[in-house]
Image 1: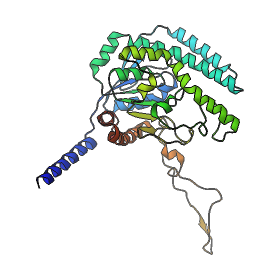
Image 2: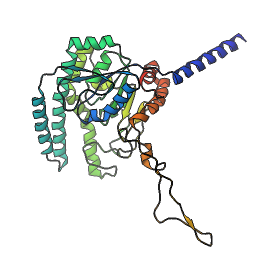
Image 3: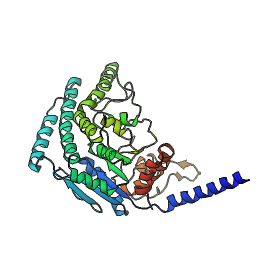
Length: 357
């Protein structure tokens, strides 16, 4: 009888706690470290919505960048970098010209072009990481803020390192990483016999030669990762005081927001903490009117269907596209599932920021 009373009280307490989580999602403090270029363009609407919903959102960016800048409903902090805007634009134009002029007519040429791209990214990311992490005043400011989670694009690993240094639950938003590190870090299956590697131009229907080339790409991918983040791995190890790598740090992410969907990507298993948000930046469409008729009856009562099939938005693939305004509810439900697997860390991230109401 006593045991039953304890169980009943425990169930009641759990119910009250659950109601509190659903009804009273309170605002929190979110650290945002974006990547430059189109990465920020795709991430900015979500950041502004989170700020408008009452969360304190702090965005940390370099003083010189291509497209980064202040955003609405957020606090922007900047840190100095060892290059000017003119130097950055000159380097970007030169790198773009080199990449665009590369011959990609055969497999060897594509691999060489891929290597050139990795070299450009390697130099840029290591400069930015060193500039912020060695800035003692800025890092002390971030520590004093006592953030509840970090939202970052792992394309630029600076946010990955800062999140680990501050022991924050990490939410990654990305659209594919350069050397397939998103597959490695999230432990998502990617068999080379069926999954065409990025930059190979192959489809899921490969010949024996293409499968062999794709298998070679799969073997080279870990080496590409090691080369791309060789300097950054050293910086991360020094800052964290232990030997580590960027893929190792990324494996501890609480939530992966994938800025794509199976319209453009091949179908594959998703881990419980991965959410596809392709179409997040689309304008929310109005529902199309119901078709005026789906068929007509003649005098004999026979039904004639229209020659061309008619669709409504409800049955269209576009209906699964998420906007920045609708993303929060999806992430909240996903965070609830992660809670069962990862405990308080993911629960904090979901409760504090990605609630909707």
